[in-house]
Amino acid sequence: MKQSKHSQSLSKAVALLAMGGASLLLVHNTAFAHGESIRGGGSGSINAVGAGIVEDVVIGLRWDARRYELFSDQEMVDFRARGEDVHQHSREDAYFIQIGIPVAEDIDLAIMTQYNNFQGFKDNGDGQAMACFDTNGDGILDNLDPICISETDESPGWGDTLLMARYRFYNDGNHQWAGLFGLLMPTGKFTNKTDKNRYTGQDEVLGTHNQPGSGAFTVQTGIAYSGHLTDKLALDADWILRVNGPGANNFRSGNSWQADVALSYNHHAWITPVVELNGIFAKKDNEDGELKKNSGGDVVYFSPGINFKLNRSIVAYGNFSYPVYQNLGGISNDEKYRWSLGISYALGGGEAGPTHEHLD
View 1 (cartoon, rainbow, N blue to C red):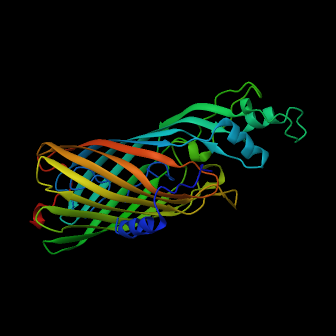
View 2: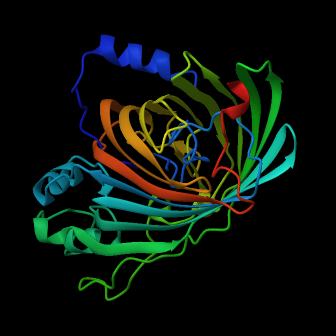
View 3: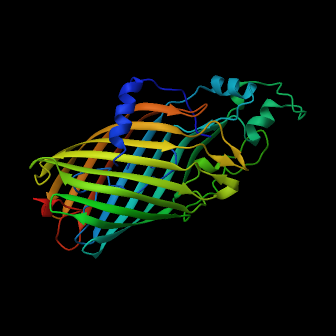
């Protein structure tokens, strides 16, 4: 159950315009699935996949950080009094290792794994919290004290691994289109436990949504585009559908789609500014055959960033993403912001990532 207050930082008209533009594109990320789909980074974009095929083996490292608004302990107690089981965490950090491999002139393969850490976890409905609220064990919550809220410092571990193939089916020298075909495999850890508590003397397994891994196979498919608007302006975009299988503890994350549009200026220069729109649109989660009402929702980000070529083969990049629109399901915490930092290295001496050179 992700946590939420409905944010209205922009009008609905602006939000719909952003979603319409984003419907071309990609973004853990995952505000929903932890460890979202394959990212760009190293070419004309930072988050958008694009359709340019890598010409050399490329190794990339990336850090994605996300920070959330939080409910107070008293608010968590008030939710419990209304029968609402709510958990939240304050921050997520994901560290990605990605390898891009050229397979043929129009096909490449990306392999991406990640190390995740979720911090500042609080729960108003686990064993510790309920034992404190219900002092007599009779099902009556006779101690609605904020001290009862269960706290766990962190939930670290390796996340799931993504295999993503790109097949470029159209290239006329000015525009490229590629199909995306991916499988997210359940290589991540999903057995992290709460900190041992003073009320039951035991720890218990954290909620599945706060584990580094999912325990589920997820199929991804989509389409990507790369092209030039002018000699100086390049466009990368993608649209990706994610269909989740059943995961650990009878939990299935809601299916989702995401889109990214990235506009970069003077992408052959040593310093390239990039502006992106990124969107994630997710259905509600399912646990034990029941929809989780405090889950799912839509988020659109405005993401300015910069690519910096250290040399032809090494590109460093960074961006900051601000959620200009959030409409999350039920009781959920708004995301405050996120940022990404990364570096890509081409082993064969070529450019570190897909290029637009053949479009010039």
